[in-house]
Image (cartoon, rainbow over all chains, first blue to last red; front, side, top):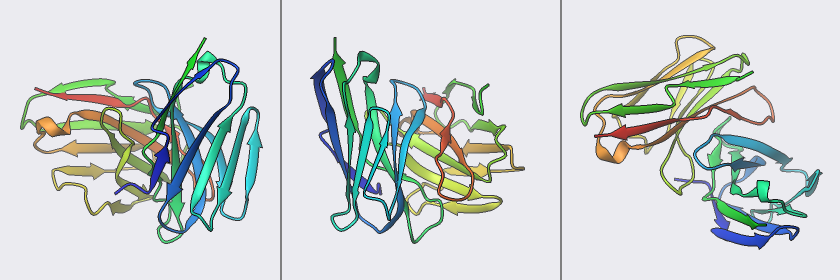
Length: 112
Length: 112
């Protein structure tokens, strides 16, 4: 079974707006990662946050992690049409080395 | 430039006819993954290797097998494909430690 759930399932925003998506997971984790997938392609890593970190930034991306609530959020600021994609969180559980499991994903559409 | 290469990109197979998908990597990573992704769903982990150590997910059907003859190559064998096995199959690699995964472009399998 998949590790996490994401919400919303789909998000449609105007170019320049911010996009926020959330991920919840079930077991204790070593780290949490976010990936992007353009239609019909492989996944591309965006950002990784360790279990002892609470917030991380990379360019227009901001990730938060709340291990007490077993949840994470990804914020994309000043969105662009090229950000149109599906976004997935993935977790490494503490109990199993390298078992990288994905959440359900959020499909983001950025309108020009 | 491609670091994780999946062949072929598109595969059509007949119902019940064994099929093999391949993955190769130039990164010398010791962890390799196979995921199944159906339309609008999250990637579902089928199995992963840490070096030669094979980790099968409990809900991966017996119809799916894998081989990793060396660090660079990994194969997914579907012994008797059914219509429900039509999906995108994604290979990924990773080095040990708290690290990101690198994905291939995927093989889209059609069962006729």
